[in-house]
Amino acid sequence: MTGRLRIASAFAQTLWTCRGGRSRAAFERWQAAALQHWLERDLPGVGFYRGATPRLEMLPIIDKTTVMADFAAFNRGRITAEEGWRAVETTGRIGDVSVGASTGTSGNRALYAVNASEQDRWLGTILAKTAPRFLIEPERVAVVLPQNSALYDGANRSRLLRLKFFDLRQGVESWQPALESFAPTTIVAPPRVLGHLAKHSERLKPRRLFAGAETLDPVDRTIIEARFGRKLGQIYMATEGLFAVSCAQGRLHLAEDANVFEFEPVAGGLVAPRVTGFRRQFQIMARYRMNDLLRLSDRPCACGSPLRAVDEIVGRLDDTFVFDRIDGVRLLVTPDVMRNAVLAAARTITDFRILREDPETIVLVLEPKLADENAKAAQHALSQVFSQRDLSPTIVLRREAMVFEPHRKLRRVENRCRPEDRP
Image (cartoon, rainbow, N blue to C red; front, side):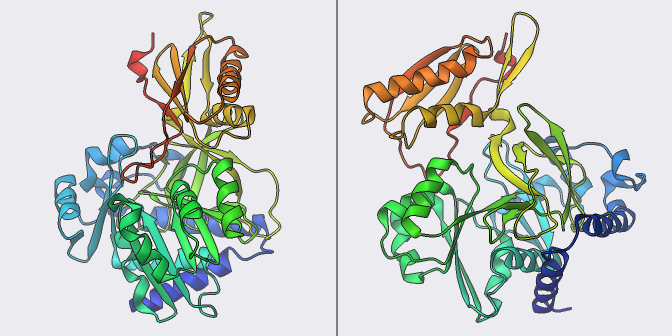
């Protein structure tokens, strides 16, 4: 099968599998059968799972550290981590396999490897989820991210679709004129970039907008949607795969047509996902623990999709603030609780940082131009978050200009206190 046929096949399969009106029960039966087929056919193809029982619940839970400790054991080509890093730094390819790497937000970068068939399937899938009418309405897609990906390589094979990558690390000023000349119909970018374009570009008139690569805060959504007059969608994607995309109604749906999700309860109704990618054949990923916090929805979506909806991607699990009280109770304060408290304190707050710099100190960073009474209100609101939980860290107020940093992901809530630093 040629690349174009594979893309078309994945496009059609995705639309059919996730079609509106399909019952959840019917979808789960299809998913269970697809998963079992993958467990029996593809799982044993790599060293780590050779001889494993083909039952999901019997497999070990893994994470980034597990995979990177023996990368060759998780891919069919027996590509080692050393070979992978050399490829990333040069051509990005080993034979017909594309190798890429994460940006390393948590301090440790991870590799991924995909063959040509998987690249085509990925492209067909994401087109079905983000631009299902591109055969009728030709698309010019601008992807603005801090790192290019081999997954985008096959996008420009049709006159109906043009995709152009803009390197965030080079600075907005270096590529904004080219972006405006490209006149994208769809823009995929981190929320802070879309917010920056909303304030500094009058020429852009996209039909669709998708935020990705960072946590989407309500304050960013408001600014972006007001400027462009479009509902802002989301794409939840990581080194490990494509995990969720917003539908036409604006609701974020898990990509359960390619992944099985298990959920570990965390705190406040939030969950951390474990992912099994049952469409992946070259690099196998089963029961992979993600470092993200999700708030699942219990409401059906008006689009009729059988895929489960997510109300919010709250942030990173390791940016949760963990406290051990004197009574022995361990408490978790999640990023959304702190973020919402600060934003609710004053409407004029449009940017901030909350940093845990040591076990007993929380730093609230606010812009110098913010009125003193609003800054004090935010400091008090954040203090209340902790006092209501019988916690009493010191809340330090710091004034700093919020600098646009294209080379790193925005983390408004950041835990800089390592577990070993806690008493």
